[in-house]
Image 1 (cartoon, one colour):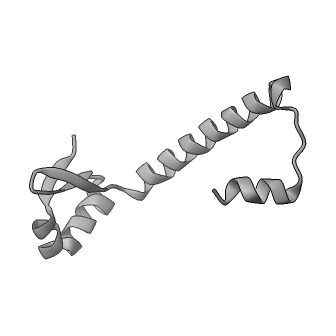
Image 2: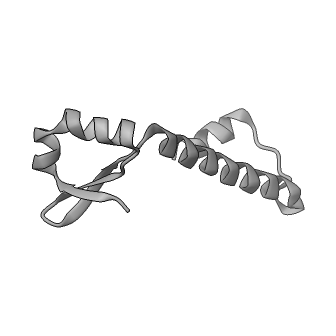
Length: 85
């Protein structure tokens, strides 16, 4: 379970907050006026989240490539145009 602190508390005690997260593995949610704005989490949590996102992206890409309906070829210019949207 994550600890919840206000933005002003996080600002005042930022060094302590970072130490609690880095060394104790604590997760801290930062709120303003009762609304959650951000979270401070250990780097390992972020790395795990990124690895999971990569796995989901890879699975989606494999599914798309396996579907014959997606077997169209695009020019490099078309790919660039689609990615710039």
